[in-house]
Image 1 (tube, rainbow, N blue to C red):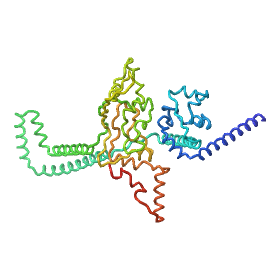
Image 2: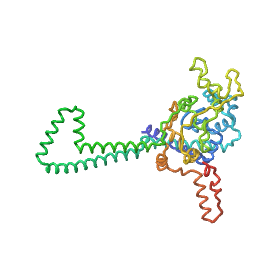
Image 3: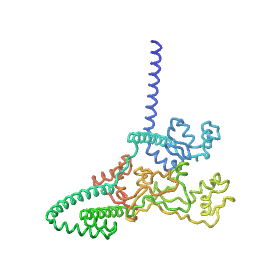
Image 4: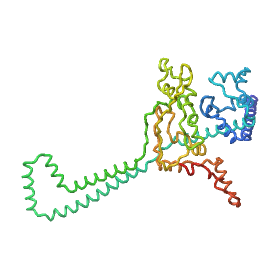
Length: 428
């Protein structure tokens, strides 16, 4: 009994200490400004190397506060190379795992770094909640097509009308048959036997078919219905280019870059975070890596033919490692095209709403060649807007509430104060 009491006592003590530590960590994380940490995280381009949930050019930040002490993190961010040179074991081990060393951020104060840590912890909680929600929902549910439903309903209605018409014609025919006299039937039968003697089987079938007025009417009715359905389906898909996959001047593989190497989308398409257009990266962005990465491992020591096209475009000599004076633009073919009257802003969806790239562009990390994954029709956009919940923790809506309160108080408000100087409101 004493041994059991001793074990239970130690267990209770351990649980108490753990709860106290958990409360302390939670209190510290909440005391920091996670919103300011998120802004600093994006302003200093931390997301170009660090991705929550997977490794990128730098380590995965999930569980950072559990792996490293806060004082160590602050010291590392201020001077990474200095910690490596001092022989710090954790810094040396981190250097051995990655080819490049993080740049120093000495301009960040300790409070700024603590805010960034709080932001990372808050994102960990969101990732965990998102994973639970995805698991509970059992994955995404496929949408229904209104066009297909309308076609099915139309065919069913057509079938019902056809049956009703045939039934009515059948009753009329039976009534007429009773009126026809027996002698006329005999004459018609004799005439039919006379004609059958000199006609082919095809002609006989055609004549018999044409004589059956009910069958002729039904066939004509079905042909009209089929042509109507085909015409409706053709008109419905006018201007829809889902699956469009043009041939590009350079075979750029998103599967290799975004999938295998896990390069963040916004490292190349930086405009998606801050402007209307996602923007195609300049060749200089490609050369950040490909001035050393030549793909020779797969071509017996020779430069990859596709990377050679990039070198010719920027007039780069890999032997002398120098640029020439005759660069040429890469003529990429646009894949996703919207009508001129349709306005779409990437930053509103990516930054404000927090929409992931895959929501519209599909599994881009698995595409060897990029194609238009979604139909990009108005119905498709409207359905998404009906299902997507508004992010309540967004500062944009706080500003709208503030403007509304000022109007209620009678304070002066101009259009410019609520975004009236935004270029995209007038220029598409």
